[in-house]
Amino acid sequence: MLKKVLIANRGEIACRVIRACQTLGVASVAVYSDVDADSPHVRLADESVHIGPARSALSYLDSAKILDAARLTGADAVHPGYGFLAENCEFATAVIAQGLTWIGPRPESIREMGNKQNARELAIKAGVPVVPGTGRLDAANPEALQAQAESVGFPLLVKAAAGGGGIGMRQVFEPSKLIAAAAATQSQAKSAFGSDEIFLERFIPCARHVEVQIFGFDSTAVHMYERDCSLQRRFQKVIEEAPAPDIPLAVRKKMQKAAIDLAVSVGYQGAGTVEFIFDVNTKEFFFLEMNTRIQVEHPVTEMITGLDLVAMQLQYAGGVLKAMGQDEIRSSGHAIECRLYAENPEKNFMPSPGQLSVFDLSAVDSAQIRIETGYEQGGEITPFYDPMVAKIVAYGADRSQAIEIMLRALAGVRIEGIKTNLDFLVACMKNASFREGRVSTGFIEEHKDSLLPARAKAA
Image 1: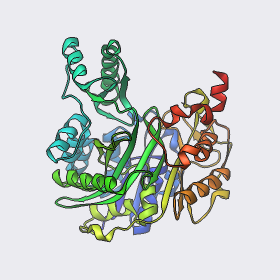
Image 2: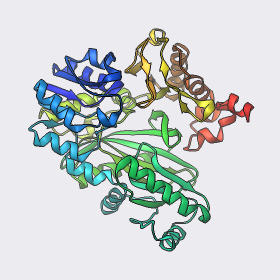
Image 3: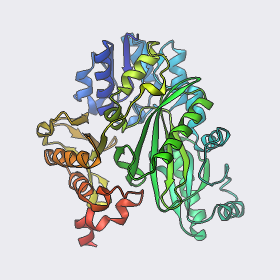
Image 4: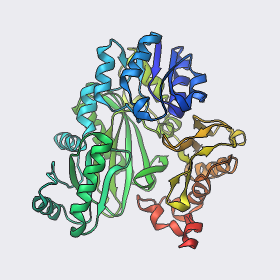
């Protein structure tokens, strides 16, 4: 088994990985920037190393500093968490070249699946259905771009091939907006990902975002069922749940098989997620992308399966976990995750940094509730990183019970000093359509007057 793991991340995911290390008796090393010196993940780890200023480009995205920290502390492995360098194949390669164990898939898999256009082509080869779209585009050729768009049909999405996290994606509803949208997407993608490659994809207006958790063993793979991640703002997830409600079991099983087929076709190793779009009207599903890392919403899957996915990552990387059979994985009950953000829903969910003058989750304590956070009372939500404050996960025997347990949990959250989406999350849980399982990626926009009454009144 691994002896000492450096976590190349911060916040709640760093805390999560450190706890898994503690469970397995593995030493942990935290890295931190100037503004994170007093953060919980630093104190929770066995050792910690300062890696630079607050700006992520000078700290959490500086692979050389992270590798230096691994050398300094004698770590024998690196866990990237999610975000930052988690899906950077060059970083994974550098970790391995230094003689360390990379806790994730092979760099080749990260490279293959990290480019959305390349991933589409691999999915097609594996017999997995993909959203109708184009190949790689030359946005400098307006005539060719317009012709490709007409072949896809409007409305459509202009997408960055190297995009992620909702960045590098624009909706286009009419031909006259295409050229400007393509140029803007290219510019954003070049700045965010270092690549301006784009492609077009059909936009499915009434869609569900469903993803399948998989774990690959190179020549075989297993799934841990699916999660519904349809409730999103600006293409970023807010509420996730498992199993996916109101989708026929037969369709969900086909999604699970498609995810396994893709994972096996690329010889995938470790934890990953295969994302699909489900067309509510036609009942078809299409491959969207593959995330070659642990997901933010992995606790939802852990709650319904009883598995510890992060511990499995550590054990597999350390050579302890061998291939599993699908019959070893069971699912029961229902789980829902709400992401508590430092943001102002009334102002288009703009981040709301500041000090947590009050942050008390003690009233939320329950065997059916799980809290994941990297903050504590008195801590600072800075503008440098993602504004997620905590993840609240509720588990029930069925979906209705899980919703009621979540409502009780949200009622027990005490947070002051910043604007949050707490009231918005409560409104979602109480919404009649949500409670009936009638959700889609357009849910927030469709129900904005009831979910965001203050914004509706101001308008």
